[in-house]
Amino acid sequence: MSFDAERHKREERAGYNLIAARYAESAALRASLNAALIEVADLRPGQAVLDLASGPGVLAREAAMQVPDGLVVASDIAEQALAEGRRRAPEDNLLFAAADAERLTFADGAFDRVLCGLGLMFFPDASQALAEMRRVLKPGGLAVFSVWGEEARAPLVACALQCIRRILPPPRAERLSPFRFGEQDLLRQTLEAAGFAAVDLHVHTLSCAFDSPQAYWQAFRDLAGGAAAGLSRLPEATLTRLGEEVAQELASCRQGDGYVAQSDVIIAVARRV
Image (cartoon, rainbow, N blue to C red; front, side, top):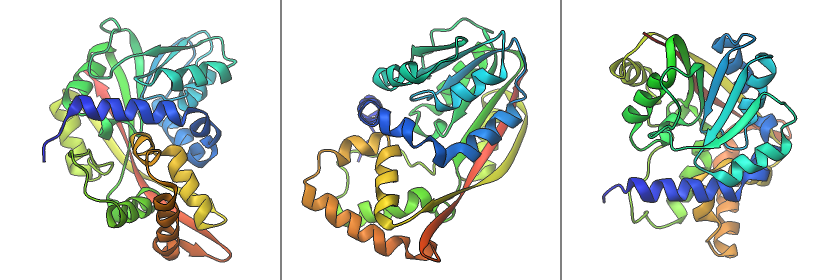
């Protein structure tokens, strides 16, 4: 089974365009993670900030409020997701620009900070994307990332994926794993190989509560990006069966009358030298 990078990008673009509004409305689920990214980014008034894999600009909006007299550019390959963000954004220092992270159209050294929340693992050529991020950063600028930790420690994503693997036939084309950089040593090596220095990693525990397995399943579908495009093409009976399987898979997250999925997310800060 081979990997088709362009097909992957088309699926990601279609998926995030499809769920743009629901993704924006589900922002509260990732609020603590976004706050953690903003904190380590050391944002200051007047800075220029690029937010990659921005979707509808949830993280970008938070950044824009931290850089008065500065500029934040929210960038993504999904133009309808960006349009949804533009519709919701009151900040006058926030712009939206469609771009492929592996082929950025921004000038060398244009930004003081580059943010990328839960996006690096979905770039087919991660090394090229990192080279582009480094190129558009000013010397001494920071790149700040979040990626899912190891699958066993990220039930927010893993529970649904395990059900999908059991119920659906194997994919015809290889897919990128959301846990691709879940090992800290690999992430550090990847960032250093791309020319970044002073790499600092720590684990953030993302805790998400749900009243029911159905609420969890809907939240996954609202945030699933490329997977959302594939799920949208399934018969309703198959989606119902997947929802029933999720109820069993989520049992280990039961707390009282509801469910709490506590997942490891690795936050990385790296400096451009």
